[in-house]
Length: 528
Image (cartoon, rainbow, N blue to C red; front, side):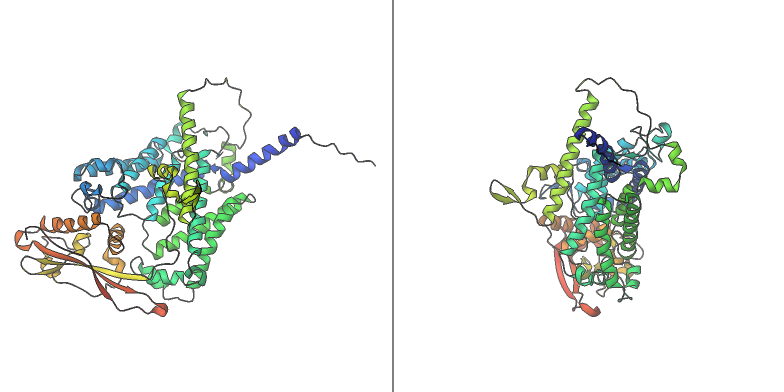
């Protein structure tokens, strides 16, 4: 028997390989429309919850009567722009917040989804720019997820929009790939890659003490975290498990094999880890927005296993569509698509270089090294608020702890702890309970995190502990006097105050350093 082989031409080989490569790229970098819909519902829900939580301190944080009047913002190093800077009164700020809430709800149910996503992003950026002192990593991720959501068909499934037009945007089933899916995919890879990278820069994550160190600090700890601290033998295991999960998530996301099962395993690992963080620490929206953003990479394999009937409703492949007449160049729709593509490409480059610079990379230009923040691309990133840093609990968790006392002296000589009223956790001025609230309590609270019902107030006070700017010091001093004397009778006006930080350090084996009283700010109120 004689065997003969016919060599394939380059053209024939390419015709055979290109469909395989295209399908694999679509599986790796594309998203399922149903997964994007779940992400959209989560984004809208978290955004609405975040706005409702912020409303507790809306006057204190975002108006001219609060800790950062617009006149003082001119002294900030990078004063942000946005709609909230146009108004200083309580009424207009509440109105803007209500519009933001309506946009978030529209996004959740998928009503005019793209418009709702754009409006939500614009208003969220404006809100975050208004006060940079009440800011955490969850704000970064929520803002970035909304940014990439503007490039994606988030309303194609499980939405009111889909009820009016159930056909897939691409006409080719549930799986799509676009510059928007590439951007969101790469953003998620950067998130987990640099969360892992920043942790590996320290020692406590490698030697297994990081979870114990983090749980020891009461400023962020919950009651559940306190209970978990009673099982010290498990904590090194949790430390290494978190490291493995974050490294493995990156590997599984970029893996070109077994995409369905491996992606599902990665998503479940993220949800389990973030649920643990949310139970143990007061971290704001970060655990929840991380979980919902990761839902976007749920593979179509998962949905097809869950509902095989969907394959009949939206087949993966359709018969070729009839050829269309080529469109005339420079139509408005084409120009918009081209502009969006350019913005998305620059944004992907920006987030890559931004994260590399946060990891310590420097870049060469004309024979000299500069940081990324000095480049034009960084200015582009800041204009779109693509800035980000994933350094939570890294390179080592903090070991410093402490609680706050705002010591006030009234004109009648009485001494009062002003903190509970300032942060909305006390009885409030002019209350019948004011008489019993007089006096200063210096002892440590049972759980320090209970001092603040709103985590953003904790973030604000911790900024005062670090390296407060002149703007922040002035804003806080004016707010204390304005807050108290604007509601108390003249006979109980505030004469002077001092913000005291009762600092101590956590040591190994449950030991702590002696408590040190540090005066952060002291001032007198005008006219008293």
